[in-house]
Image (cartoon, rainbow, N blue to C red; front, side, top):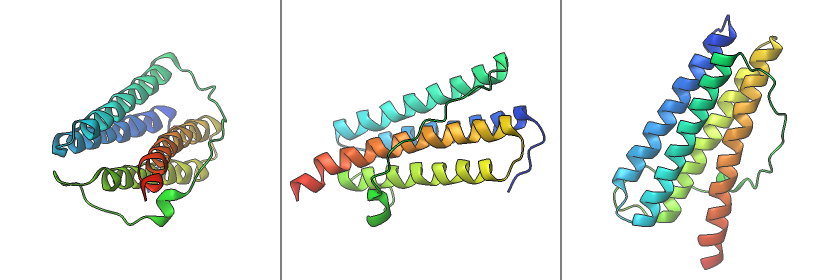
Length: 151
């Protein structure tokens, strides 16, 4: 696990992670034949760009007073089989892949928050974990509405 000495190092790491998420969702969108799926993943890429911009603003303006909001977890991603992206993948499989990605990001940020004594760094990681849990919840709700109800 990386060691962070300053809040700037934390924010740089977080921005790099958000850029990786942007790239992931953009790539996933390019592999989709279904227009609705393509648009869904492009929307998530756009949101990740927004997270990165928010982190940059926090860094530039030295804003470290972040929310402690809690987000519900439906835990659907705990019970579905993981899959790899492919051009012919079904919408349900793409949602599962996205849920797993967001869950991994949540766990990463939660773990990083638990490993620091610096309250500013801890707050940044906890806030990022909340954001990722919101994304996961959105994918779970989409899965519940469009996959589970059809079966």
